[in-house]
Length: 287
Image 1: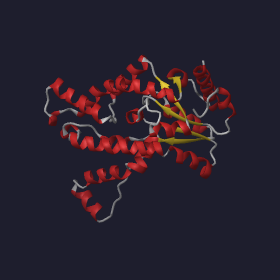
Image 2: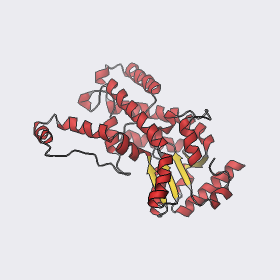
Image 3: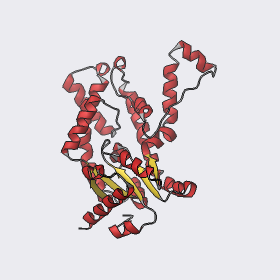
């Protein structure tokens, strides 16, 4: 690990960390607290995906929808209007809207083959964005003069790595350049995330084999035609299974770094609080 003890962490002139775990457990919240302190550069994987690697896909999809409207079509063809996405750290809806969900187009879904194509685009984009971490660590100091660095990952990082392979390209690069921190939720957190998702389902990214299994299971369980699938219901059906599928992957990834319970991370209000939490995590790992 980059810091092998609490003393290493305390003495480090540059602190570089990466948060991973289920979406909704405070990765971005703590990142914002650290960034607000003025000494931390916040590298958001989801933001990088939406701007650098999927920005053109997102914009072209919006243009394709606009081209269906005669009034907007004429304006686009004459270069009279501009269409773009307004992605920010707090607003990643353009990425989610592009990923969409499989099912009935009348209910807001897209064809399953198109859905798989966009999932594959996202997979490549996330891998590239994760491997860009080292570049941004250098950029944060060289260009902006930030001494400390946070990599704020998305919940699907675990889908593209092999935690049991010591030569895994992504994990090897990330662990050599950051202290990887698993924000670990418990069963109560999981149930709250499921309830929250049920109220407001959002598109997610999955391994192709996992997606195939849950898609086939959904079709059989609800006995529906592919074209009649309710996309939002499919997302709800899949979410709890996705959390169960990801939990052991996160746990295996934790061997590459340290673990902090979500309830403990919720207590962080200042950069000093964060330092204390990481000292505790390193001391616990050493026991």
